[in-house]
Image (tube, rainbow, N blue to C red; front, top):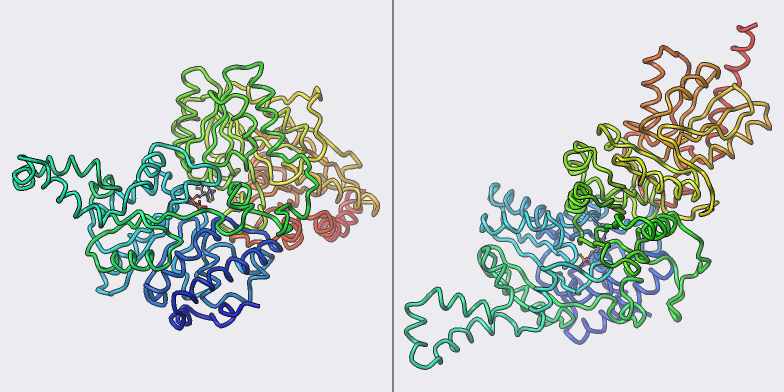
Length: 633
Ligand SMILES: Cc1ncc(C[n+]2csc(CCOP(=O)(O)OP(=O)(O)O)c2C)c(N)n1
């Protein structure tokens, strides 16, 4: 079926094709991506947009020696496809399958691992400076989208690139989209640049134009360098980059293979840093994705002909509950604002943005800025809610500590995708937030057992008069009663099962559900447990924890989080402090990065599903219980 693609096993095979054949290969690649991603799920629209660009890159660079750093890395599928990983595509983003992001262990053609945005220019500059110091000779290229360019790290890196003047190419893949529409002043600037003629043409023309200004023209060009510069401002696209010391080439039609190839060749021959501004269409070639690129940025399996998800049963997710609670609360409380760092859909705040546009802030991919923006709003009397994926708040650690918590500012941090995230894998697992947040004074950390609790916790955060972080996972929120009169009280847990004191289990967050199932299984085997829904990781409900731990023979904790720095380790510490010396087991992730796979698969692998929990407790508790009871008599 794939006449050209079937013979592409390495970038060298591309060299055998002429331009017409490359065009045909491009459409085959699009069909291949559609066919595969419609089954596995993945980042569809971004990859459909970079087909010709990636082929042009591989025609200019030899990635066995030349280095490419893909920003975010979600657009690297075409690169993977032509660097010998075609056969593995059906395992894309699956348990133990091909990663959806660049992975150095997967191929010699992957040079730097990414997943979080806006790192590519820094990494590429790092590689380029190392190359210069070691006297090697290869090309280094960062590929960054206009969305990722809105991240602070990208600005910091551009600033440094302008100073270093080393050979580095930056391909700016401008499709006018982040996940949703791109925002910000730079994005508006790029919008203007997009419609300008290509720079190399203009560069000569500017001089010709000035020459033709009657009387002043010639003398101006000779004497008035500054005037020439100011005229350049009007005519030269990308002048902002030129001013900071980076040669600008563009804008180039990124779907025109030859033009893109030519621009990349030229960039390669220029000494010093060069930015190549490439215009592409997100979702190119698939009508549904072209029309609604934000919906096809990241997809689960879908029907190609209709574009509809195969599982269309839309249940209420935790993100939906958070978003709806904000909308509901903002109606009565006009101080509430909602902030997102380029993820309004993912974090469920789109409805808020439509209902309260003046109180909604999409800051671009700028988590650090978002946190301090919230601090500023809070100090001035508002109650900001920053809805952010747990993994991306890692970027804002210092801002949470220094700008929010130090001043004890009422800010709500809604940590979506906390816990195992599934197919995105290592780079996106939200399993570190309890650790990096619980060491911060003043900050409270909560996690709901279900949707009803999330609703109540968000309401609680508006009354807490302190910074509050609420973590909840991706996926459906079972039991969600928006009319429930559940009241959350600071540092108070809830005992949810009271079969007996053989063991006590302290569960934090929705993983409580697994523990609950396990408790019932154990009960059938005459192991009688008490189960506690902690609600707070900070402040811990010390009294309940200590009282129940004293009574129980064995103590268990469970959380969808890394072991080190998690709730379990804090409870163990608390028990030690109070000289309760009993066997404790913490169900949590060990000290290594957790790979991709469905939540179910990962829970199973780490023994955190109901079966795993019950099995472990049964194995440990039964012999010991006999022993304890015997000794106790
Ligand atoms: C620090 C961080 N915040 C948020 C994200 C989520 N994210 C992944 S891709 C993306 C949009 C990237 O837009 P762009 O760079 O223009 O690439 P495109 O998909 O449009 O090609 C976002 C916000 C991320 N990966 N990293």
